[in-house]
Length: 333
Ligand SMILES: NC(=O)C1=CN([C@@H]2O[C@H](COP(=O)(O)OP(=O)(O)OC[C@H]3O[C@@H](n4cnc5c(N)ncnc54)[C@H](O)[C@@H]3O)[C@@H](O)[C@H]2O)C=CC1
Ligand SMILES: O=C(CO)COP(=O)(O)O
Image 1: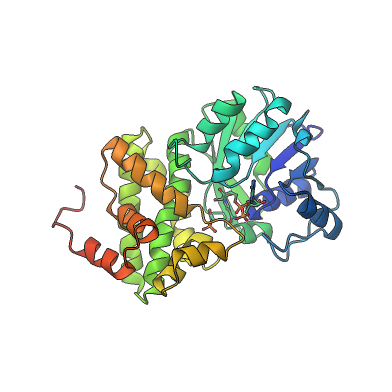
Image 2: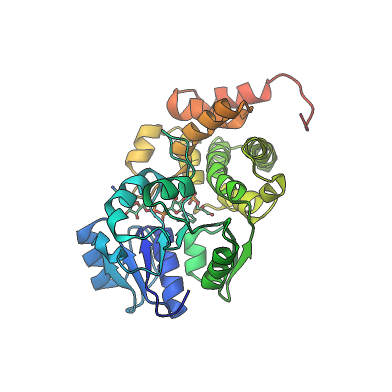
């Protein structure tokens, strides 16, 4: 990426704003696209994002707009809108982007009605030929504050992957490469379901034994599905797998964890979701995970119980009992 090639970041949420600020600090010309004109004007005027990234100053050098034609002439696009909005945003922008424009997806989700990964959606709508994924244990507030963090970039385009590594690498943000895109995308998306489970466990007042079990058995079911979909099992033991699972299951700033915790404490799912400005991707991803489990004939008992709690009004304690009373089995089976 040349310093004179404009970078467009699609999405003014916590992560899109963090990455815009990081790239600005590195001296790149960056445009942040917000879906809402009023909020774009607010961000541009007050140089702070109280709705999604409190307390982080936005540099004057960051250009902010709600005009999707800002994509025209972009040297690189960072896709940072929640998964449920991605297809629509891509449709709005598709006349302004060429298939050879590099696109970095930092989105952690699986489209629920198609079961497509985000790179698949981008390829379908924009016919993009150069797509990279960035994923890992990256709670936005921590990265924005310069707290040491790591992530992985992944692509079948080796040169694009290395360029993306250079683009984001910073003194407090260390980037690795991993060509297993399916594994990196699945790891980042499916861990949100397990983070909801850990939140429920905390909300019910359980201890670290229960959470450790959810993390270990959650990772086992994520890896099982990933392997069936062609991912490498090693990827799930790395930064985009176990790494992201740990941060999301244990960090109180995680939106997925906090949705689970509130459920465990007795709030209704409907009430929790209505009260949130930010998006907890794990809610819809739970549906997708169960859809993929059925499609690939893989058992995902924790995801299935979370589905029952979220969408079938199963009481969390019933879900726990269902998991604890499953048929005896060996760990590797
Ligand atoms: N926040 C974080 O710590 C991290 C988030 N991610 C991922 O980044 C992606 C983006 O999430 P966040 O930046 O966290 O968002 P957020 O939850 O902070 O903010 C919500 C976003 O949704 C947008 N939005 C609301 N209605 C919309 C509509 N109708 N059309 C288009 N956009 C709309 C808002 O403008 C805002 O950008 C997600 O897939 C998330 O999992 C990945 C790593 C870290
Ligand atoms: O993906 C994330 C951390 O890596 C952010 O997690 P939450 O969406 O649960 O806040």
